[in-house]
Image (cartoon, rainbow, N blue to C red; front, side, top):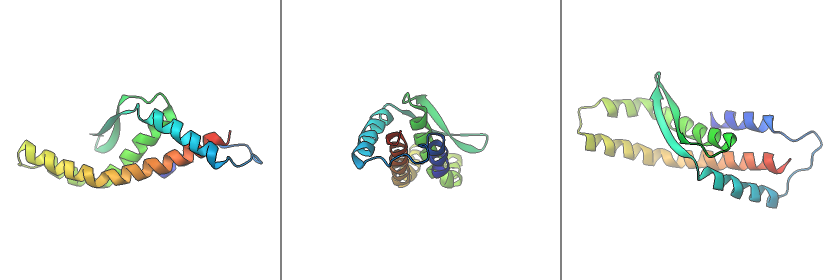
Length: 130
């Protein structure tokens, strides 16, 4: 899903045919700038109408960055939704449910970080190409 969202963003902002490839230095500068904006983002995930969706509390101020973060979270948590639902519906204590959910979050976090890293790199490439 994150790849599809990133592709959509890249196509919308793709450089004109024949444009020069951006330098690694330009891409690196864009990565730094995007990561600074990404730090402003605040939110999480929730389940709505049976699907995992993004809960945006504070936008980064950059719609492409917001989509990138939300897409990464939704893509990485969706495969675990049944497991999360089972934990939420269990008769365990609130502390036990929180601990089990935290364990899943810890397992999913590398996926989110990887998807974000790839998305930031692609977005930086597109922006450096302008």
